[in-house]
Length: 124
Image (cartoon, rainbow, N blue to C red; front, side, top):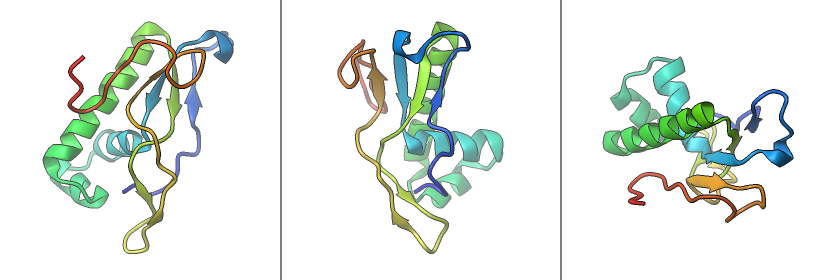
């Protein structure tokens, strides 16, 4: 569960057309996990409770999200924030999110293009 839909859904290196960039996809719940843990400096158990997931699940989501962002920064890739499995709204007024899709990378051709990059539990 996430507090709100992201206000910005694409980040890219300056000076390069997005059409020429390979993208990684950061699921909305990955952004929320990073917001709670890294920006709000929330304890992982508290953040997991806020998102309505177990602490181990929160840690897997956070680790995968950090890896996606690190890859984009190091490799000069665009980061598209979309999809995933989430609900939106502050408790107790949860509402349905528009989550779909999942962890991964998209190449220039849209879904399915580029190298695969799995999320939690991905083995290669």
